[in-house]
Image 1 (cartoon, rainbow, N blue to C red):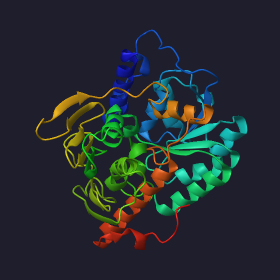
Image 2 (spheres, helix red, strand yellow):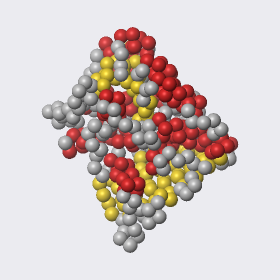
Image 3 (cartoon, one colour):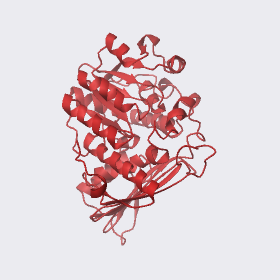
Image 4 (cartoon, rainbow, N blue to C red):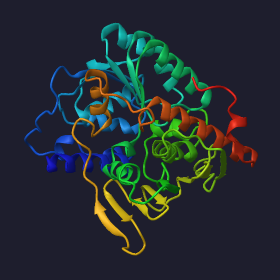
Length: 393
């Protein structure tokens, strides 16, 4: 079992951290033990369709070992060359590939779909599949803006389907351990400040492919640049830790350090969220010297720092000093987005109201990003209650 978790972690690191260099991502069977890991899952697999291949996080599901919990029954990708390229890499049949969502649905009836298209395209996926009773999981963030998010939420609720959002950091054992230490065990006292650093040297610099860059660096299709791409992580985690609280004020500054590479969008953003008793700082950038997704939680008596998915530093009080710990992986069955989706849909696993994947959490995330963009554009701090005058759907 330990080897299994280590293999998953290695695949995730290669796909997500180095991940845009497609030629450098090995096939799953090059990383796994030659003997296939036994399935943890009982019952029929969840039949899923992959909508879009232009988000390179899609390698996570295409390269995933068979655990018996999900079955890919179709792929929608109009770019035939891209679909064939990934087919050669991951070994799926082109018989699974359709040019459009209607063409797919005419032939196969998935129980859930996973959106790996542009963020702007998330609304179209929900508009098509929610009325058919098909559950949806999208890649982070939920939507490009608050208008899209509200439409998506209304459709999901009207038709009684799950609408979940996937973040790489949702599956970090360190974040789960931090939540337990801070919220359940109360090791550091009440939260006073949270600081998040998310990003990398830049999507072009790390070798993202043309199909990914085409929408990722477009302010309409992505909803922004680094602010959207990486600001959402900290907003999501903070909303989880703060149990659905919304900030009273949002301040944001953005920079365009590399206009020659990213002429249409910001490549750096600093967002400050002021809550009643807590301050949250989100530093989202395509200008880090290295790939990073880390979190610092400061309480009244100590702190918890998550350096990556497993390495942590914890200080309960200054007298005893800090200690380094290693977080355990998440349990099988909730260890990655696809296992989690199968558990939610087929096993009726409850979705925590403000858990990291929940609709409630991710509506707030989109609001935070919307307020941050407005604050950056106007140079003025956004007052939450004045800015959002419409009720959450």
